[in-house]
Length: 163
Image 1 (cartoon, rainbow, N blue to C red):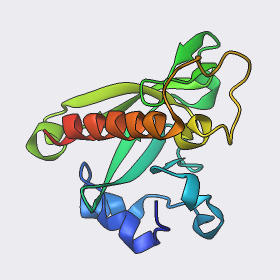
Image 2 (cartoon, one colour; image 1 turned 180 degrees about the horizontal axis):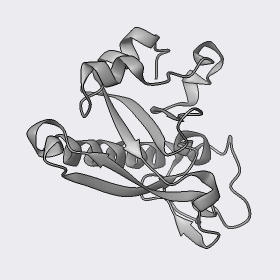
Image 3 (cartoon, rainbow, N blue to C red; image 1 turned 120 degrees about the vertical axis):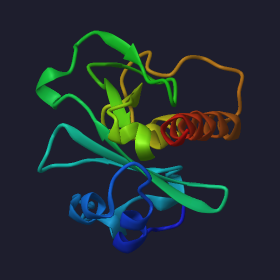
Image 4 (cartoon, one colour; image 1 turned 60 degrees about the horizontal axis):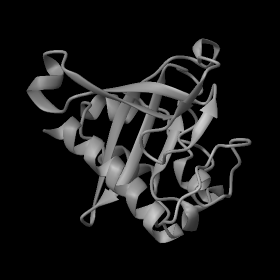
């Protein structure tokens, strides 16, 4: 993923108002992110622990979604698997819920998925971040195929949000 600016990030959101996008907390360490290893930019809001955000480039266009999630204190200590990157964690996967875009979201409709609580799927897939023993299943897929699967899973989730 190419490095993103704060302005690009705020303009990408599809399931919140322009005012909400303007007020959300964008990471301050954008220049320090490992952009070459990221398939999407994901972060939790340090000022609102129940909020997280994800921005990805799909078909040459940035799309961002706001997510609701449990605070770290509420994370379950059971072993769970991220539905995006298929990494298993003990206490590191959360059900994250995104309001649907447009009128459906205004009516309270949402979609959810189990994601890595730190939104670092790209780093787990590449082995740049370790989720512990047994976190990555043995697979015959190449690294590029695993990356493609993760991107496809994120794209499918965003398609549900925007449908």
